[in-house]
Length: 219
Image 1 (cartoon, rainbow, N blue to C red):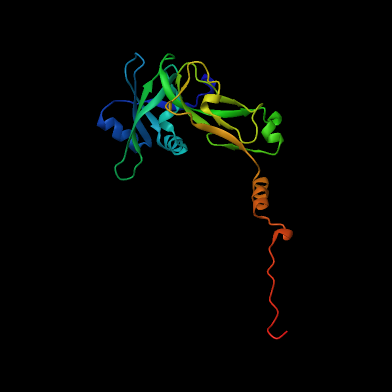
Image 2: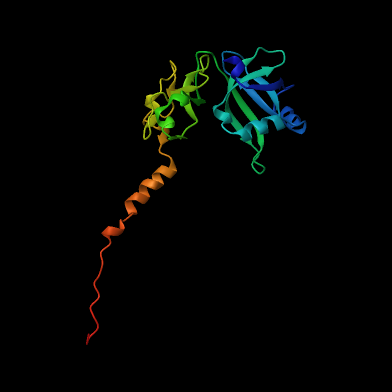
């Protein structure tokens, strides 16, 4: 899994304290600290533009990164805090926590669908509607699954696939554990649904009642 975890590049920050942090910001860097994992804290700088790009992609706080710092071994980290400028709302400091392989972490795992070509519901013209294309899971940092697999081999039109219908990787549990939320469902095509509705409103001409008109007075 190490090659599938996104890299986060940083450099060792020369000096600590407010002065060194201000200089880093003037140089287009975001100062930060890496702590935990049984090692001493490490002061770092991260390129401002690259960090901002990562932040704008979303879910930065729940993404596991492979931190690469020259002169240090790669280590898995997760963000535990981002300080922002009070006016500009731009990152001004970042806190990263080292994770051991036995540490547990909440991250989003993508959902993959298999056997679509043999799915009875899809072969009958049904439509697969994906409600969640990823699920936040609590997993071991050293054993993060690539994906959650949904098998469509026996799914028919009208079936709903819940999280309880998926075989989860060993040691992985949904962060939302108090309800059986929906992952996807297979529904009838809209055209078929519309045709069914039209049939309910159709009245045969023979069933339309007729009204007899009386003859005019004097005839």
